[in-house]
Image (cartoon, rainbow, N blue to C red; front, side):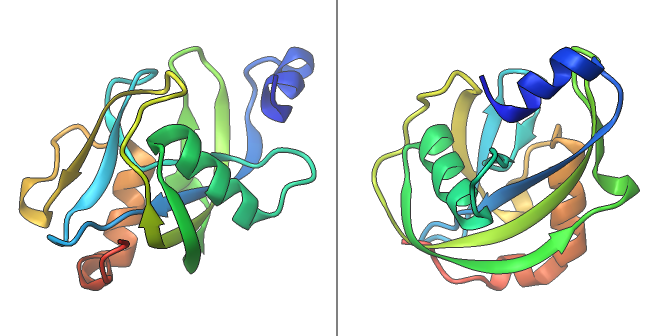
Length: 156
């Protein structure tokens, strides 16, 4: 059981601040990797919350591996995002204000695999073919970084 789950036993669903990493993976066609989330049934970017004692880079490494099966040899920090746009209410009622450290994965290896039950599907999308139902925090990140996203080099 993770840190947030243990904390929720004491505070219930009320809002908390969570710190985490979200990872951009770009294939050689310039497409961005999304995960079709099993909890909200929308499309999001790989990532998750920090556990006690982890560095933010360790969060990025762990979450990328857990959610996609991929391993990155390096990460480039795009930016840190927080505030009202990154408030989220999960289907179970848990509320969080996310502090998102957005990374671009570099020198990625491995095969796409869904190992943790958090994804229904993993798929790459172009700027022009993004899914309609993008999770609100992922959508906010994409809007905030704008055209810089589509100029990132391939992660592979």
